[in-house]
Image (cartoon, rainbow, N blue to C red; front, side):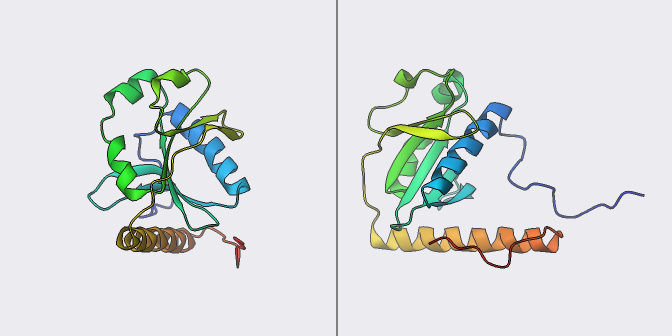
Length: 165
């Protein structure tokens, strides 16, 4: 008899992400982790918008990475300008089949193949206000701790400590 769990097997996969988007996300997460950042996928921001990836760098900067899996995915999205108010830097990330030229010049650009990624255009800096930074840091911390707690309750074996320095 199968065991039914009240906790989904992966709460970060809700059917909205295409296989290509997940591939891009994986490569970007690997790159950011190699850079020493910690990354939160699918973080809901104040106002209800959900960012594809939010990275907290070693310096304490917040980067939002908006993943686009196709030209059409970019064209139908009108929410990404709102992410500037929630990040120190805003990037787009995609895979090699999507032309870089469609993405705005005033945003960073990351190319991912699923096994890694490379920043091809740095994002301009637009520093968060102190109150916004504090609110985002609390949201990031609470979401991280909540996901770890749910994973542990679901029986996922977690390391005793993770060094992020």
